[in-house]
Length: 151
Image 1 (cartoon, rainbow, N blue to C red):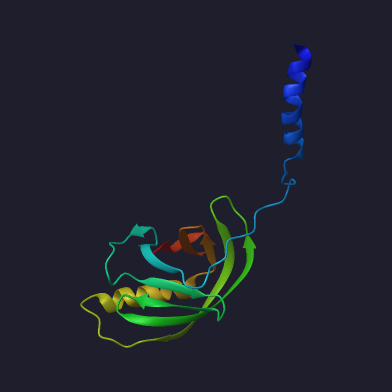
Image 2 (spheres, rainbow, N blue to C red):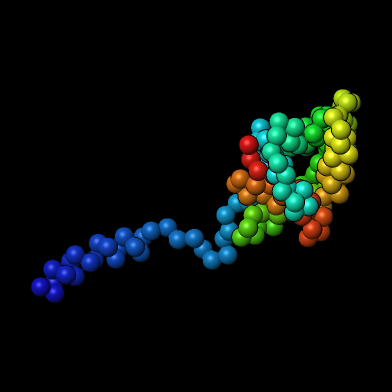
């Protein structure tokens, strides 16, 4: 009986011993913004925003290092650089720098222009970016500025 038990457990033991193991200290590759992903703004400085067809969007194009989208009324473009991803349990964090490149010029409804200026100003202040599979958050130091969800 003992021999049968050993013969039954031996293949399981060998299978477990041969399974690939991740070496200690090896972390998964960091997430990186991908071309074509459209992010929609859901909160600004921690305040939730109602979703609408005019909600700001952000599209990062890593090939040209440009960020573009809709800022309430007008389309905008920034140049950006990402550097030094730091892997964290809640998403990979990068140092980021946005440089304003241009904006359209369409009349906004009442209050829209102020919201647009505030949004563009917050993008310009961002110093780091946290990325998960479904969210993108911009920070100035450790203060959350803009929080987006993948559309």
